[in-house]
Image (cartoon, rainbow, N blue to C red; front, side, top):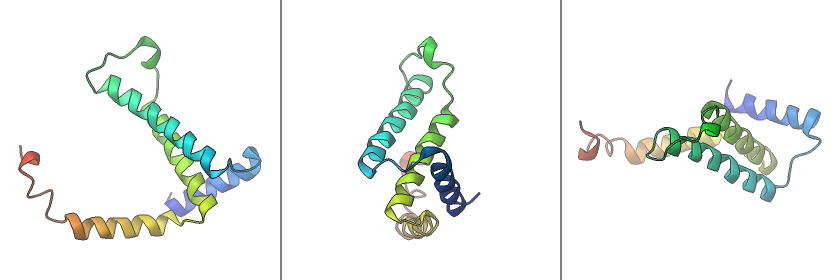
Length: 109
């Protein structure tokens, strides 16, 4: 599925089950909450904090999907074509960073 298809699927889901989009501010807060859930899992599972028993069943993929869902909602309600925006971003990053990471001594093993 491409981003355009994902945006369409989210819009169809919202229309059928969600009644309407939350306003942009609410979705921004929702996005922050979802990113926090991802951060908690990564911090405890891969970082130095110990993982609580109640967190061991958390699904990182599901939490990342929650982040994507809210991003798609925000894109839909603000009229952004994420396919085009993402292509543009990759082009900019390639132009800016095409040699940067290869020349970074910190990334050499």
